[in-house]
Image (cartoon, rainbow, N blue to C red; front, side):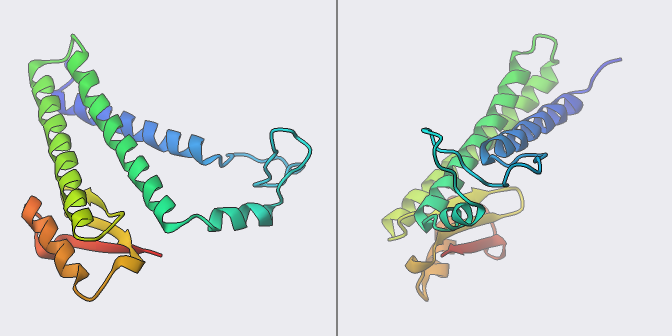
Length: 181
């Protein structure tokens, strides 16, 4: 039975998505099963003579600065894009992949690279226009731009949407602005 190119591409993308979810779960430190003897969220320090209570852990997590939240989001986005590109490269490296599957993988990689370039351009332009930590997410359905709430003014939505439109073919109504406090 021949596996069609679409099945290979879909399988690779599902595998990449699964890997991204697994890595997110792994790095978040959330246990799947917790024993009753341990306190959920308790941290043990390196010298092992003190532990943090659940309230201390919640307070520390809640104190994450907006800039740190945006930096984490940018890092997560970059990792997800790297995984998708890696999946496309894996298809290309498979010797038993058909030429059509390899061509689709190249096209998928090109789309991802174009989105990465457009996101980078949008973020650079917004930085030049006074938004210190803007993050842009492009998809087939639209664009989401995340900025610090403290940097928003009355004319910010127009500036952001004009910037996105100048770098992409996304329609005005499909641009979403998210503010981070």
